[in-house]
Image 1 (cartoon, protein in one colour):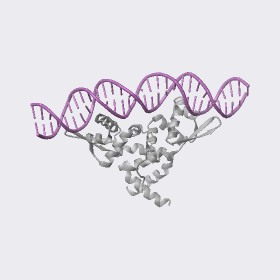
Image 2: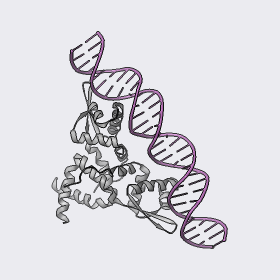
Image 3: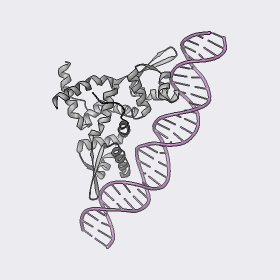
Image 4: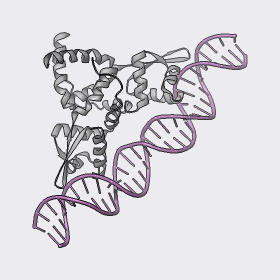
Length: 112
Length: 112
DNA sequence: CGAAACCATAACCGTACAGTTATGGTTTCA
DNA sequence: TGAAACCATAACTGTACGGTTATGGTTTCG
């Protein structure tokens, strides 16, 4: 029946991904897998506290998870948290709606 | 071959849709179709200049088009402009990638 | 143990931004 | 023609936000 209605939880996702640095961090985690804050700091080209704050925002949107191991913290992307955004596009992106609907139908037949 | 690489044009879309009021306006235009600034102002619950500025941002992201008719300006949503965001999800939303890829393949067979 | 690495939080700063009122330019119409 | 409707822009304001340095808490290791 396709995604329904009121997801207030969509806002944190939209908000988090509006910042280029945050998008870059998420992209890097998606491509390279789990990363320490140190590694992400080198990649992002901003200070370590800045990266920590970005990770906090991403964490609130559930876009990343963290795992502490000794003195370092490993972050990894959690792409399932993109679902609200996908739902929104499904709902309001009229141009894509047909495609999504057909996809839904297809997938239901493919994976019961 | 699925969407490729560097779309700097994705940023304006992400940025524009990060604001709740702007999303609401876009959603309203998608649901109800073409609307005047006056109507959108009533709907949005903010001042008319605020709406005008939001529409300007949406316009820069190509998410809306406008058509002047006498003293009123009619705006309408342009959902195709969501493409960069869809591409981004396709690229970095690992969880959705398989689905999108299968969709691509399916659509190519369905609409040659 | 003591120093260094790793990370998070605090405190601060400049700017971008969403909102407001004020104003002016077109267009409609009585 | 003159007033009112419609819209965009200008000018201003407060706050949110992304960045920085400073600091402190764990953890590792020589």
